[in-house]
Length: 635
Image 1 (tube, one colour):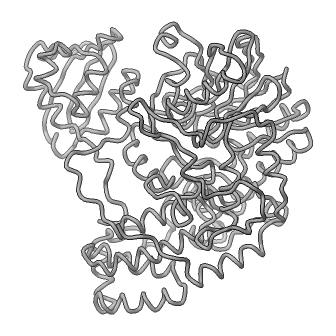
Image 2 (image 1 turned 90 degrees about the vertical axis):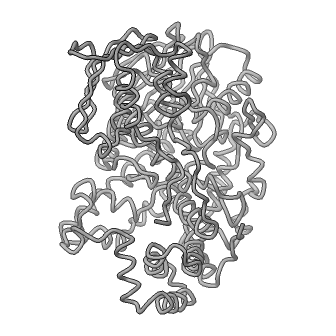
Image 3 (image 1 turned 180 degrees about the vertical axis):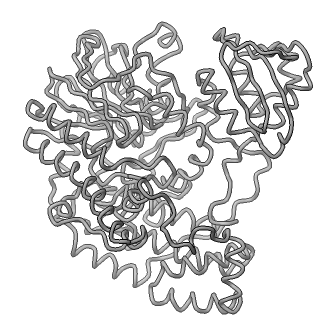
C-alpha cells in the first residue's frame, strides 16, 4: 500500500497564513472540556462480542490533549483543526451539574444521563450498542447500578439512536419502556438512514475518515467528534412523540419542558429544558463549530432561517432561567451570561449565511461565486465555536442557494452537462492528450494550485482510470488539500480519495450492503417502503404482480402490487391475488439482503406461501442488493 506524502512548501505557507488569522488561543475551551471530569476507561477502548475494537481512542495517542497554542501541530494538519482534535480527544464521564452526567468521546456524539428517582434517563444512545453499553457501565460504576428508566432521542440522525441496544434490552422494549422523540422522528430516520442508507454510508466513510490510518497524515478528527464507532446499529421506534413546544413530561420524577424544532439540524429535532437543574439541552442545534447546512455524506439541505429562528426561540423560552447549556456534541457552557452569548452567536451564524447568500444570489452571483466571496463579520469570526470544523462557510452558502434555487445556477451551459466519463474524454482531447494535460497539471502542482490540478486531472482519471500517473497526481493534489482543510469532513474526503486513487479497491465478489442492520427493526410500513427503492425498474419492465402479505410477528396485513415498474403497498386492503405470503419482518429482510434463499426459508418454515411460489421468487429477483463499496473517485 502506497504511503501518504509530506506537506509541500505551499501547504506550510497556507498554515502560517491561517495562524495569523485565528482567534486568540486561550485555554478556556480546554478548561470547559475537562470541567467535571469523573473518570474513564483506558483509551476508551470498547470491544464487540468477537473481541474486535469498535471504538479505541488509543489510536489517537499521537494527539496531546494539553493546551499548547498549537505549537506541536504537524505540517500535515490544519492548525485550527489540530486544536479541535485535541479538545475532542478528552474522553470520559463528566458531571455537568449534580444529577446530569455526560460520557464524551466514546463515539462521535455524547451520551447524557439524567438521574431520576429510580434510575437513569438516557439522552442519545450513540451510534452503536457497544460504546453505549460501555458508557452506561462507566456511569453505573461511578454513580450506582441503577436501571435505565427512559430514553430520549433528540433527533433523527443515527448517532443519536443507533446504540439503543447498549442501554435497553428486548425485554425493556417489549414492556413499553418510554422512548421519547420529536414528531416525525421515525419517518425521517428511515428516509435518511435506510432509503438512502447505502449511498450515505459509503460517502460517510470518506466524511469521517473511517478507512484512513490514524495519524498526522491520516485521520485526526471529524470536527464534530473524533470519528464514528463501528458496532451494532439498530433503530427502535419511539413510544412517545413530542409534537408541540411547551409540552411537559415528568419522567422518573424529572420534569422536562420540550421545544420542537423541525427543519433545523435535522428534519425532526427537539431541544428541552430541565427546570430543577436549570439546564438547557440544545440537542445538535448548537455545537462548538459551524455545523452543516448540507452534509457532504449526503442529506436533505437544512433550513438555515428556521435553524436560526428556533435558537432564538430557545433564548426567549429558557435563557432567563437557564444556568447552563449542554448539547449532543462537545462540551457545555456554564453560567447564564455565557450561555446566552453562545446561543446568540450560533443563532446569528446561520442567519448571516442565509441572508447574505440570498443577497448575493439576488445580485446574480452563482453558488460557486457566492462561496468564494462570503466571509463572516468580525464579531462572528472572532469565536472558535463558529469555525469550519464540520460545516464550512463555503459549502453552506451553496446549500442555502440550493434550498431556494436548486442545483442549477441559471447558466444554460450547466443545464445538461455531459456525464463525467464522456466529458473527461473530450477535455483530455482538448488538452492535447493525456501527456499534455499531465504536463500542465504538474506545472500547476509545483505552483501550489491544488484546486486547479484536482479539477483538470479528474477529467483524465475518468477518461482513463487505468492511467496510474493521472491517479497519482490527482492523489497528490487532493492530499495537500486535505492537509490544508480546517474542516474534518473535507480532510476526510480529500485524504480518503487520495488513498483510494493510489490503492484502488478490488471489485467486490459479494456486495456488502449498507443499512442492512437497521432494516430488521423497521416497522412494517417503513420496511416495505425500503423495498420500493430496491426495485430494479428496468428488470421489472412490463411485469404485473400482486401478493397478499402477512407479517406473523406483528399480525399486520398488506397488499403488494407491481405495475408500471413501481411497487405499492396497502395496509389492510383486500385485492384479488393468486399468491398469499406469511412471514416475519426479519425473514423478509433475510430474503431481501441474501442471508437466506426462498427455498431454505420455506424448508425452515420461516415463510409459508399459498399459490405460485415462482411468482414470489420472481419478485425477489427484481430487488437490487446495493454494494456498499461503489466507486467515488473512479468511474
